[in-house]
Length: 355
Image (cartoon, rainbow, N blue to C red; front, side):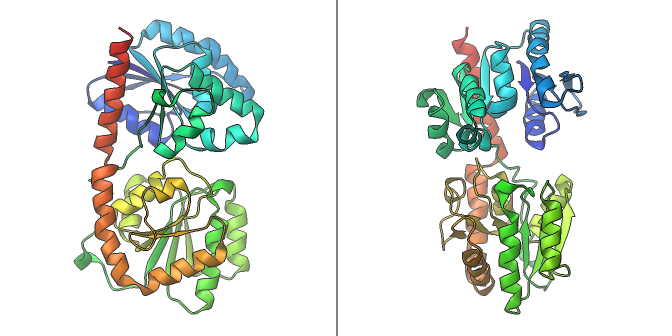
C-alpha cells in the first residue's frame, strides 16, 4: 500500500504506526507540522509561515497538492480537532481519522469551535477509529453512526516492555512510578499530595515521576513546599529503553488522570508487572478490576489515593498475583502486533470497499 499519514511525526505513537507499515513493506508518507527523521518514511512538512495555530489553515492548501502528487491508497489522520479536521477539510479520501482521547471526550464539550472541528472530521471520514470502546459513544454524538466507528488501541510492545525476574530484583524499598504528563488533565498534583500523607505516616517508598509538561514548575514547587525533595525524583522525558527499565524496576504504578482515551502508559506498566493504582474512569476500569489486579479510586481524591498506596504497600501477595495477571492481560489484549493487525485489516477493508 501507499499510505499518507496526516499526523504529528514527532509523536512516539505516530512513529510506531509509521514504522510498522514501513517494516511491512508499504510506502509510507507523513504530512506533519513538526519534523522528525524516520528512516524509510518520507516526511512532508506542512507550512504555518510562523503564524502558530492560525497558520495551520495553510495546510488545507498544501495537503491536496501532496495528495495529488502521491495518489495514496488511503489517508490516515490522527487527532480529530487538528490533523483530522485539516485532512477532512482538504477533502482527502479514502480517509481514516483516529480520536486519541481528549479530542473526543473533553474538547468538544468545552468549546463550540472544537466541537465543530471534531464533528467535521468524523462526518467527512470514511472510517473513524478510537483507542477504546468507551470512546465510541462520544464520537457517535459528533454525528457519525456507531457502525462506522472501530476501537483499535495503540497497543504495547510486550517484548520490549516486560518484567524483570524476581531473582534479579534487589532488596530495596518499594518503588512507585508515574509516567503521565504534567498537565491539568493528568492531575499529578493529587498524587504528590497523597504521597505527602503516606510519608507523614513514616512509610518507606521511593518515587519516580517520569515526564514533563506545563505544570512542572508548580509540581516542583509543591514537592518543595511539602518537603518531599529527597523522596521524589523528577526524571523529565526519558528514552524508550530508559522508560522500560524504570517501569520494570517499579512495584506500583499510579495514573491519576481525570480523563483518558486508552491509557497506553497503564498498559506499559501492566506489561512490566507493576501493580496499578488508577482513577476510576472508563479508560482504566476496562483494564483494572478493583482489589483484584489493582486498585481504583475516585479522580482527584487525595485521601482515597493515599489509602490505596498504603494498602498496596501492605499487600505484597496481591501485588504478586496481579503481576502475573496483568502481564497476561497485556499479552492477550493489548500486544502491539494484535492491534496493528486489526488496523491493517481496516485498511484493507476500506481499500476494497472503495474499489
